[in-house]
Image: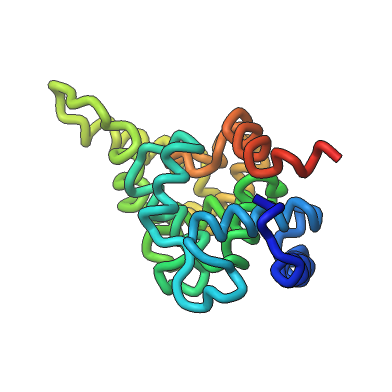
Amino acid sequence: MSQQVSSMNRKNLQKLAESLCKTGKHFNKQEVEFLIQLYNTLAGGPAERNTRGGIDRNTFRNILHNTFGMTDDMIMDRVFRGFDKDNDSFISVSEWIEGLSIFLRGTLDERIKYCFGVYDLNGDGYISREEMFHMLKNSLLKQPTEEDPDEGIKDLVEITLKKMDYDHDSKLSYADFEKAVREENLLLEAFGPCLPDSKSIMAFERQAFRTAHNH
């Protein structure tokens, strides 16, 4: 693919990569260039010309599903919103780089912030009982059961609150969530898988940077 990039495009690509390195601080410049090229392929046009549009929801969901094995519609939608910072229904090239930086290589701090944003469905700064119920029901109930599943989920919400709600206000603030995850890292994705596992990360990076690390 890079053979076809003319020297003019090459310059543009390098300039863009330089500025986006600050955004995607977990990638080096060469990796950012590869991610921009992948973005151009997915968005159907060069990022520097592509002021309107970008990667749309469907394209992004396909990546989450096919590359990262996500199957939960609601969570995929929330991940899309997590990437789409300006809420214009498209992922721009800078949102792509910034989002992937946290998604693939984020620090614990960054991942806590990201997961909390995914789970705070109405964006009010809290994960409420209703939101927990909604997400747990959504991620756990793939198989219909005989008994009333809602009761079991309600119990699970109460158990989760007992463990994570440090200020006892019956909802999780960011401080509650952060403290709980620091004490027990497994709680990071308590309400549904919204980060890729290490196998998918390796596969994605191998493919995206297929020649970046061969030099």
